[in-house]
Image (cartoon, rainbow, N blue to C red):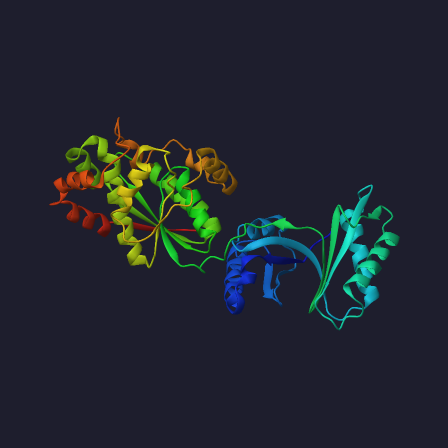
Length: 396
């Protein structure tokens, strides 16, 4: 088995950023270094004319390295490469290609291949086509189990001739998206359910730094329910980078709403209170939007009419990346990112404790405002206390 010492990192959308591309490349490099910080081994991350390389020094854990890189937003493809410094001869390049094919595919009974050369350094002799033919001939002569198939090859043997030379054939999919920190900051309303961690992941994938807020209602919700949300924030942080989780004691507000407002409107009024608090914390943290895991029609508080009532209290935009997903699609995504098993742990949050038997599905804003008016003398003070007593936990 070949021992790779370098990885070629390919990106997608970043390449369309024109004169600002270097900023996105630098942000991507910063995130790669962050993700590799806890992986055993020494790594050097460099960029070279539209390419980013991760070079290793000494022993390192290949599987852990690939796993870390697969969680870096902005990476489209991870290619383990044999990398050689500029200055080798044409014969040495052909010999390296033969050795690569022997080490990677030598145990196969038969394998078809095609050579694809990118000759960015025009001082290197020949053309891409002649290099393809010469390396192909060398591989055929040096590896008896190989055959050429230019239309549907099993192996695409890539040769890149730049400031350094690279040979590779393995392409591992990355998560895509944009590097973290290139598109501002937003506040995620994080519950203990399946949806909100997926929503946070999807917005982080677009380069947005994530803050999170969780509404805790002791003694109706347990410390284990709180820990479950901390665990979910840490799982999101594996992709999004460190997440500040703001834990708000919601009991006083929730009980006041429960005792004062019509029960069929409880969920909507509680949700409006959460959005107000989340926005207040968002403004303090420099966040520019709110993120929720709502999907149209999934529950009574997520009908179009209910969402209109919820949005009425917000001045910030509300991002709902799951708005058109059905439940199975959300579950599939949560399993992919590793949050599903934690989300289904049987510890209820404050949204599931106080649920009306017959919640309103088509609330009218004027009716909701009238019901909230019964709390006008105390709500501001309760919100102030909730904000002043909020706890912050850094989840990494």
